[in-house]
Image 1: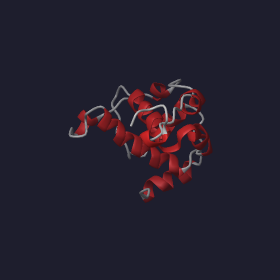
Image 2: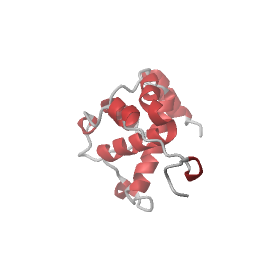
Image 3: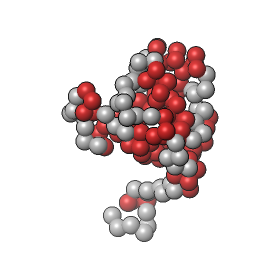
Image 4: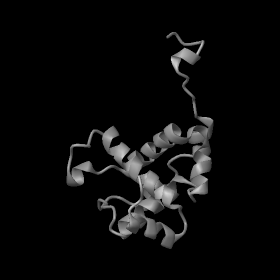
Length: 136
């Protein structure tokens, strides 16, 4: 999935975060909407909180990158969960995402330690056919 030109341009102009981080955020937002059961809702009823977005980002990173998630994020310029908030609010300020009045950048502060949640906590799941400890 390509990134719309205006979002790619925003990422390049800002320069702090790779365009891939913006694309990943949009994937995580859609996942957060599904995980919270709001995929059929419209308008503000689809809104997800900063914490719900962070949870979705973490889950998607584990699914996509496994224990390398934190390293991938760092290469994109993401060094803490607060950086994800900065990406969100760049998009809000550019009117490419909407926010509720109660949403703040602080919602993303100290969400979790990237290494603890992505590298250390990673638990691979082998298919049953390859896992001698699991019954098929």
